[in-house]
Length: 253
Image (tube, rainbow, N blue to C red):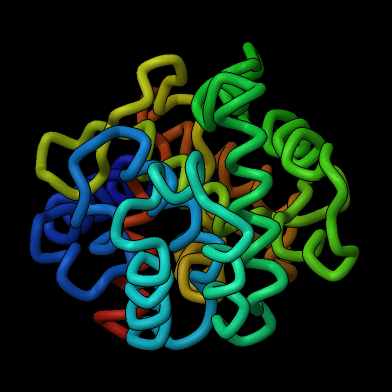
């Protein structure tokens, strides 16, 4: 396919998959249970953090996270007691455990109390891409005492990571897709700054379509994919995540 044909093909797939039915099996269903901005973004951030592995297990464990927070994530973050935190210690999702969960709550409280909230921390950038902002966010997140084991659960593009889960979280927050999937509740950032949440599925499909040549799904591959997707739509390049993911997961492309 030439570029025009490829764009037409992928645009059709975006329309097919960027629909409310997508929410039913995707981890984005968890923040969709909330209405207040802070509840949505905290639920989304925590859900995205554990979004690796089996999707059903991700959804179930993210739901457990919300239950442990009394289904009021912002209130829990801001007003928890030490005894409340003890109730989180039994949580486990793969290598993310209760120790990590407790620190995430402490770090989020610090961000909301002292840094203006999640949006304010990420929005402090004028760059064309969000990768430096993600690294800066990690510095803020771990600016209070932390367990060393927990650092691995927040990716750092400056260390070569594609930061798939944080890029997915940012897509959820920034894109307003008018279909009820992505939230679009962050107005200080533009969809043009977003990057595709590069994983095994989107990476393999991108390579088959000639959008990506690099074999590893790392920061260099993400830059290559970003560049290709911006040629298709510079204003909303990450919409093609729906096409790449849908082709990989649902159509076994």
